[in-house]
Image 1 (spheres, helix red, strand yellow):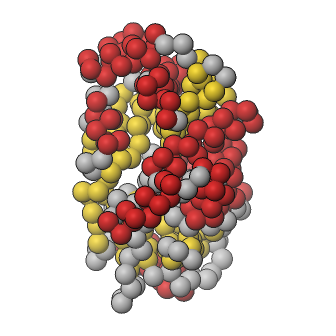
Image 2 (cartoon, one colour; image 1 turned 90 degrees about the vertical axis):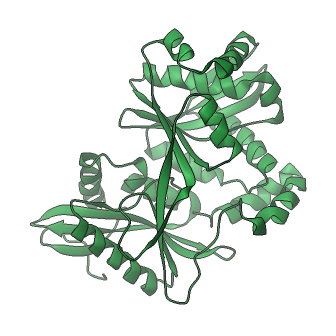
Image 3 (cartoon, helix red, strand yellow; image 1 turned 60 degrees about the vertical axis):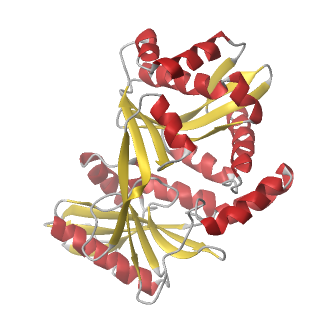
Length: 352
């Protein structure tokens, strides 16, 4: 595993996602296999630039061609511990391989690499579950649906009760702006900070959002009430799918129905960009966000995540719904927003 990445020959090698030649070949392999954005070296490098968590990965080669790829982020946190994650700050990832044998070899190599780097856990967010690893399919749900032919048809595709809320949002005095510039990024981050503070969780560093936007195809859609941004979402576009990824709303967004306006406008905007699918993202099973997405007519699909832990080591716990975090969440909500915004990014960098 300490051998350099060699573009000829067979076997496993540690890859450098920053190397342009290596990254181009891996990107090509990932695209051929219909991978998620979180499999891309570009994603790994953006995460590293935005959070300081190291980008790496393992490549399998056969007859001089890439036969497998495992993207990895080496996550370190004094609070949450160390782990190799596929992929860091992503909702997808996991092993890409041409066959089960290659997948198993990549998994074994990840365990070896984790041991060498003092990471007691390896986490896979999607992909095949390696033999001997633990997995769960009951914690997270994904929500994906097809976009339809035109604006009115898209509105009619929304179930009646939710459609009524969208119509009310369209009748309101709200403005919508889409862009990638500094003003768009600043408005989005201001809204996002308020949104996650209201949930009692530390906010990600803005540097992560900037880094991802700089290297991936994406934009920001923001809903304004007068001059005030009240709902905003940073979305990525990948393989004909729009992925609203980091979004939220202020306290005012609810009575203004700004979130309803935001997601409906994003559906229209994405279709005009050539997208055919809307990926509403991941939500916890039984959660309010999961129910909200069902109200839009999205059918939930279980997501399978796997993990390996070194003998005698416990898996790291970053699930905010666990009872052990309830007191911390309540305390965080009581912090002044300015304080939470200062303390949050250094903590959130370690979540991965």
